[in-house]
Length: 272
Image (cartoon, rainbow, N blue to C red; front, side, top):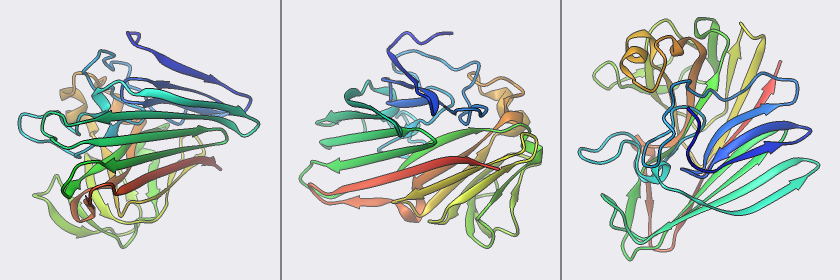
């Protein structure tokens, strides 16, 4: 199914990529000579008001679900405005904006800016500015789907010893022992402000994922049963991706005063 809305296509000596105006949603980034880094669901829905499964959804101004409200907020369901596009020897830089005087479940004025820098690396910066007249608490995430050759042969390094909230085990707080591996559904919120490395043995590569403005790292793979339950995800999709998300959630929720700004950043590179 092809998108029924504008999608910007990037073709550069260093990479190819695409970004949908719906949600300012990065759908593809493929460095020259590499396999795609971002995973996009073959069953993704491309309709206004519907989230896109895969790529990098922008979760804002809340992360997770709220009864009667869109999951992961409304920013990914709105059309953003492209305000800047620059092509240089280092790659392509795009900037998008979304403003509002309040929305369903969020009666606060706001201004969002998302910059996307594509080249040998991919850098995403989400700048959120609170324009209301009283403080607000925000949770957010860059919900990044990463392609891997085989999830069973994939591990995440950089989180050993970190505490995490296991959302699949009664939200118990646990401590990570060794590297993160996958032999079942994983949905965890790690207390970590550091970089991680995704080691993909099947494709003989590593994905370096850095961030700033975040002390929570979400790691997710739906495994077999949840992949079968999600209508916009093929039944066997769990085998080829995982999510590594730079997040402000849990103990890392952000309180913004009037006219205050917070920036959430994630950067990716291929190594090995």
